[in-house]
Amino acid sequence: MDLRAQIDPNKIPKHVAVIMDGNGRWAKQRGKPRVFGHKNGVKAVREIIDAAGNTGVKALTLYAFSTENWNRPKAEVKTLMALLLTSLKNEAKELVKNNIKLQIIGNQESLPKSVLKGLNKVIEQTKNNNALTLTIALSYGSREEIVNAFKNISKKIVNNELLTEEIDENIINNHLYTFTLPDVDLMIRTSGEKRISNFLLWQIAYAEFYFTDILWPDFTKNDFYNAILEYQNRERRFGKTSEQIETRNEI
Ligand code: FPP
Image 1: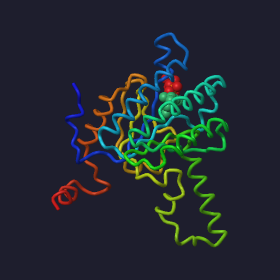
Image 2: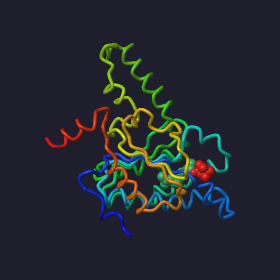
Image 3: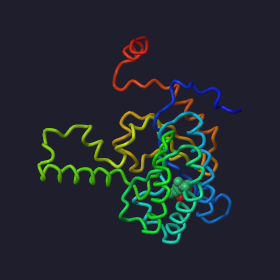
């Protein structure tokens, strides 16, 4: 059954973040090498971008490669990088057609120059699009992002561009890689693991979590719609009481 029709268009999460997990196990179940799982994971990425666009989600952030993933076997890292680059290059036309803006977050210094150059081309091609912002977290770690923000804020203080007293949540937000994005409303993790794995720690302060046992290559549009439906059934209180939320809704 197509679950899309059941989605309330007035309660769409603005920002959905996804930890795409389980590619390796999916491949292992089929007696194939891990990279086979990553290759099939690309298909799921395409599905989910489409589904996010269909439902009116404004920002979709995908965890493609963490700062810790550099410790994986060299051959896997190399294949993953190549896969990311070719998939996003191949999708460039489709991204433009669907008014999708691509951006990357993470420690760009550690990325191979060729990957960065190729991705920057697609980023440039899609920079004026505004239906959906697709953010790929690449060589990303939330703690590294926060350390980087601290450094940049400190530099401004030393240069007298900022006073310590002026530091507030907005200032910190504006120094994170995600400064253009709203807070995460819904965080999805596939493959049965129930961890955050250093992903968007600041940005998920009030996010709803959706965990599923489905391995990433098997994750479909309908699974994405299901996550949105579950999100729509949750009561988001932001620290308030149910009664306060009901009153607010009546206004
Ligand atoms: C986690 O599965 C997945 C990754 C580390 C890579 C995700 C990358 C893709 C889906 C490829 C392309 C992405 C884009 C954005 C085009 P795992 O290897 O940790 O699986 P396991 O936990 O079963 O070992």
